[in-house]
Image (cartoon, rainbow, N blue to C red; front, side, top):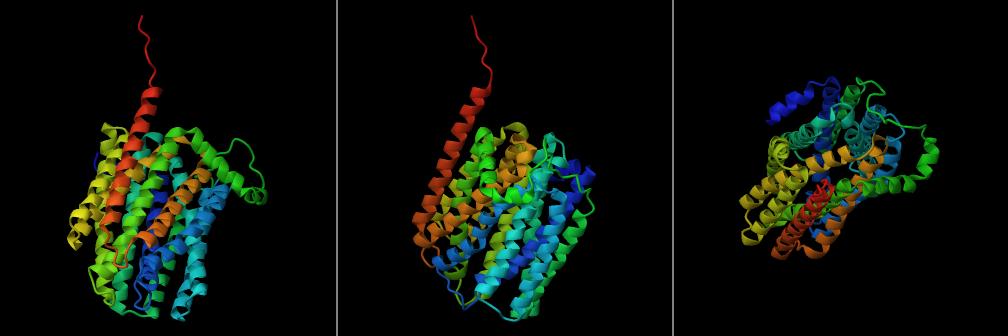
Length: 435
């Protein structure tokens, strides 16, 4: 079935349409907000351009996700998820307006970082809530299609929002006022997303609990236990555990590749002082990656009708390994853009399957905690990649040894995940006894 066919299949459900509209609106706002952040933190002329500085920026932006994630999981399994989608977006809008005011006033340093981190931390509630809510708005057999359509469309809308923010900056001229205007645009998007989420019934998205949950205050005090419960639930459902381990490995290698790409466009392909050229090149890479995400959404449901989801994940990682090896042989701007497209297919194709495997494998009462545990793995892997990049990458991002390392890492992940999944699937098939 085509992407358009998958979309038609899942949008028949009224509640999916409402959740889908909420996601698209909020992720477009995310893209605009992140376009302003890219200007503020990575491409301002006065900022350092070393691997260490880029890695530190990523670590600062992503580590709070890992701290907030466990709390988000506990609350997602106790509070009505529809309410979280509404209030998280309203809170984000208010906090983003605060960031806009700080940027317009040219406030920088720890105060601005703290405000940005607070905004990004709230995003954990929203994204984890969307993943935990999806099985409530489509039937089980449509989960692959729903994940393919919603996550890919959301990513594409984030790229569109980022592109709109980038174009607005170019039209209005680079200045703190322009960045503030882009951020205000994002705040409007968050308010719209909250209004769309409010159209759903408060109890629609769960959680479905077998017993009355403990008081929220008590639950938050035991957040470590909640995260451990989520990890234990994953461990007892081995298919989900294998998938999460594989996607965490992918996220590490993808993170190393992303940091390298930023440095390449910033300092290797262009003059480090030519900010516009660096931003334009990186925008083209994101666009190529977004096109890859779209292609993955088109082909993944059809492929997984013919082969197992675990087999498609293995193929995706093998494809990424070949692509990264290509950078060792030739590193030009065109080859990096082509690689961004191919790795985009691999990244999104594998994530669609991992999300679906996790959703199919776990109980609804644990979904919030498990998806928050998923977020922690996802972001810790990227932060680890940032630390590795700071040590291994040169200032211009060009390191054949690192490209080879990433290629080998993807290949090993494909082999290990493929073999363990096939072994588990063979063991699960009942054997007939012949006399």
